[in-house]
Length: 538
Image (cartoon, rainbow, N blue to C red; front, side):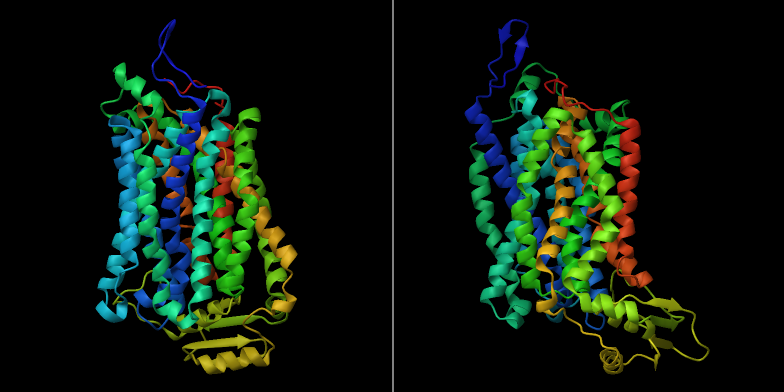
């Protein structure tokens, strides 16, 4: 039983029974699962509908544009943390995340109703980005509230385990989105799914919104917040107290760069970027990729609870740091092994054939607009990138727009048919042979990366709650969490894909999560200290 005392020798009326604690964990976790489901539908379906909301002509540019719109939702998450964090510290934890889940559910449902580029032109991507911004604001206010709410109900010696239930919600929400998308793909013809079937998972979210609101309305306010308010200890200016007053502003900075940034990139590499790598680069069919990732998440999700429980015993910080360091050291060999396991023909082709693109007017189109024009070089690199092929860039030849060398074969200008023919003549196969896929090894590689995710993510909620005082906790912990996950982590698909398109190396995007993980490990080890035994009631 978790209790708090208002004055020495007097038992506070704000008592949390074990039954209420379980109810709080269940209700908070289920609501947050549905919110993550809403948020990650877009990420999972982006490759499916990218071409519908952006002009045709360059599929890689359309995908980058879809990822840019996807990233917009992450960019505003810290602002949602500031907005709703302030409300949560002043008004209460419970009612704040009732508002956030309503905004999220509405934005997700309306996404399923949006007109496409062919219908309304540039209004379509503008509406899409607008809804992503609403989703980002809502999610920015959700996580900090849920983690704070659960931690403030939990006994001191089990905060890691209790808040780890909240940590499972992002993965479970992602799992739910994969399952529902998989069912839709199974029941709907592929052409119809690409045309309109992708909308169904978004529209289903309205049912989840109703259920989430129902279970959250039954909750009581956090006992820590109730006692703080009754004693007049609440903050009247949580933004100023969080970000402009020392030492709290120092702790916000350290929480971001010493824990959340590395945790964010490890999370998104192991669950999202690897999915895009499977389907876009290695050309595994989406159905198989979804099933694989879903099974890995199903097996790996209990590890969030394991590492949360372990953090109650040995501390949160050392587990998070270990996850960042191991991930940084092993990402390159893991992704190279994944290529060999899933598409050995691609790996063999690349080892035997050097591809060079010699041109002068090459551009990286991160977001396509009416101003965008594609050069011959852009089109050649787009074609090769879509095949999952690495290539080298060379200086332009005099008088030539673009010259492509595939082994000894020379091609001038852009001609998709000739490029495809030259690759075929050299022995290239665009899709992996299912009979050659090493399924057990693929599963193990994916599971290893999910283990990294659970190491860095399982203990992070309790770690952040323990860093900040109750009166500004919602604001202070939400901001670094959503900068780390929303900016450093959420931008990963866009940045990594752009790095691959820019360099022509299918593995080059991994330098981004590796670099961020190393920085986090250095700062975390040097400047952060373990706080698992701190009293969070003050």
